Length: 230
Image (cartoon, rainbow, N blue to C red; front, top):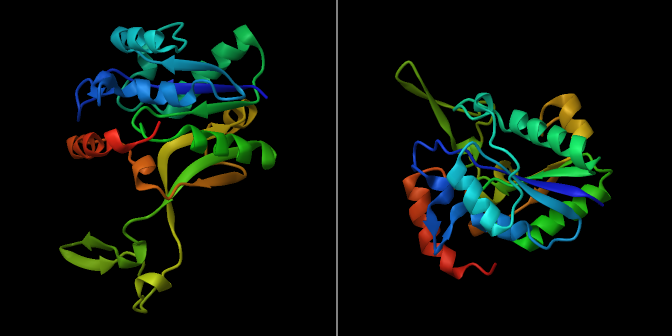
């Protein structure tokens, strides 16, 4: 078993400037994800893909592999994580040989645990090594959502007129960004984490599901980080 852990960390965060190296409970945000992947069976390397030298320096100090700075064309606002992952896996396999899987860990999910990562790896090998993506139950069910059209609110799921109690709603899930695990061949062929057979890793713990995108998210993270058992 040989899995490459990839952490993508661009320097140009606009909502929270310097987010990936901003201190969260005494250590840079990116270090939380590096530490989560350290020492896990099956992970051959922890590779950080960044365009920022400060992020690179902090990542190297934390024990990650940072062999280059990401090309500018892969560090724009509209650059996709798929293209970043393809760049990283192709470089790594050319130098170090084939790996069984590429494990994408976004630094904005600092509270995912080693146990959760190991569960994702376990599911990956149990389910013919297609892909594993982490999901969480939605907080606001689409049956209760509305959309605004021409100044009028309309039911988003307008084919469901029945009034549902919370306990009667069909379960619906959303990706939370904590973990993506896929074979290099699948990623190269489909250029997506979502094509083919997807095995869900369901994460119910709200702390682990936190994806830091806004200042409010950061404030929430500061409130709960000291309670997390790494």
